[in-house]
Image (cartoon, rainbow, N blue to C red; front, side, top):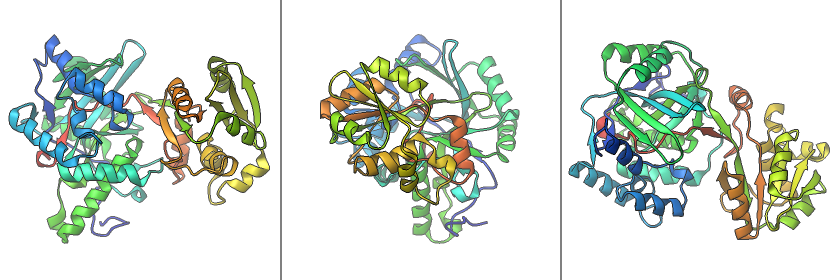
Length: 438
């Protein structure tokens, strides 16, 4: 059956996670302390969580850190350099291609408070209308173009997207058994306190069990919407270039993915805050008072406590000075006029929807785009520091709930860009996928 949006594209017969020959760093002894330490040094957080300062710090820790591949060159867009570095590292043995195709069991743990297990493989790509892999968030063209250029030139998936599904079946039981009874292929203890462990599943019977359990299920993109859009764009590009479907079929019909059973390992949802450099705090508060109730708090700690306790939608504004301001209760009449008529009530009630459709354009006269609004994951204090440095305003939000995200996605809608940050996110550099590795 052809793809509904593009009749030349293949359609998988369900949620398919194909084994592949992983590309991994050749550092130290996998079972020894040196291997644990060295592996951590060559890995990184996902590309969109890395600042310029982070790049310098990662390279200071190890000159062969994976950041040279995912954010190449001085401007982080030198894609031919990434391709050449990848080839050089493979030729020199810095990176090595595993001998057999595998689905990789991946565990992230920190003491008694964090445990997430899942599978890393090559997921078959499907149009969202097929409802096999559901996006829940809008994307921006800039990051898609950036990741597409990198993927096109390197012919590799350098970091996995993050999918969640409602499982509880054979695959989850097998993942748990492998993680609790077998010696890991690689381990890394990273400076965020997480221990990462990886196992390769190559046995045909076990791979069949994993595949049979996943195939009838539906997955939600937790993290990596821009990369999934990139996978699909490259797939369409390669099929268009080749013409006939038989000739076009290839590794670009799949993308590197971590898939986690959210019923066994519920993800942690964190907020994504905004910084508006061109909007001074006093001006932001003054304009907002005509649309919302505004409550001043003496300092950030008091403001964050008030935000956490507030009824949604609620926003904490901070910037110059120590005082901050909690916005609640937007005027219902103004809000009704601002929200798109075609959107559902559940979508219109999201704090990020009200921010994108009402506060930013109607109250502050701004577009919710990459030029006017900066993004800060998780860290409210970092957002406030950035606002003070730029003479602007930080908009601090509470996180959405998983139920909210699932309800919006199930209704065929997408939340505004950068509404959610699922965690823990997969560590970049533990295992990568090149097109010649399957």
